[in-house]
Image: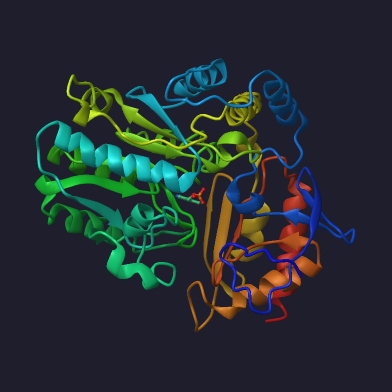
Length: 416
Ligand SMILES: *Cc1c(COP(=O)(O)O)cnc(C)c1O
């Protein structure tokens, strides 16, 4: 045992697994066992482990400039990255603010939106978010996330938000029109004139259980928000960089948020880095001769040149053939759609999921834990969200590996 304290982990009875090497889809443990990483190491890895092109880019940058404070200096890696990224984002998103991870990208977005209204001289003082959402573990991000096990100890410290139902859908869902209508009706019934921004994970709620919604719903949501003059913040920390089958969920839904948050896949899984990208009109509200209108926010490693170099290389790899478009889950659908122990099969882009039928639901369900252990012994690393099982491998995964993973999972479901 070591003296390490692991994230999201009950340390009582915890036994760690020592990982020593990563190559493509595989993680190799100290004892020589190899497992297929179908979690993309918490959704960050998109090209596979140990990618040499990205590693070389980081190496070259490290020899030149490892870091310089971004309050006083700018540098090529940051400039080139945002120039390249801009081409993939809706045209209105043109001001790039760096931070370190998904949570900080979200904090930045919330603060930008909130201060925007103050800078303009209006009072808009609350956020609307969705039931089942997840945006990170810092206080602002927890406030706009679902209130559940994760946030319960801190509930009195969180700021107030209003939550609306999320129209979660799956293959064969017959209620979806009704769910969407009711969510929109809920929204329209709120005091939108006082709302600073609506925050959501577009198309897929990740940690909340890989809950998908239809692109059409985002279009309708946008209409309501634009009409009421409410800002929209897309948290694309997970959905970004190809996960939904397009580079970003805003492309897939043909919508234009006012602010977007990016992290996880940004550096291809090599280094922590994040971006909050804002519309020009938001940025402009901060330009002033009075200092109070400044955006007083920043982190020590803002725009780390190493992170930027990794992100630039990763983006080049994505543009080179759009590998996320090649993932084929037809075998997954065939294997599980009519499976007696499975319900709510859902597939979008590089993400596939279903729920295991069970009396006890949610994150603390034991079924996921058992499936995880049995799969691991068979060489498949999954990280179920309660009774929700999902695949989110790096894009280097082959159809043969997806078939293999499905077959392992089917064998394990027989044990339940
Ligand atoms: C993971 C995640 C976050 C938080 O990112 P961290 O890097 O873990 O801080 C925020 N939003 C979404 C949608 C996420 O999936």
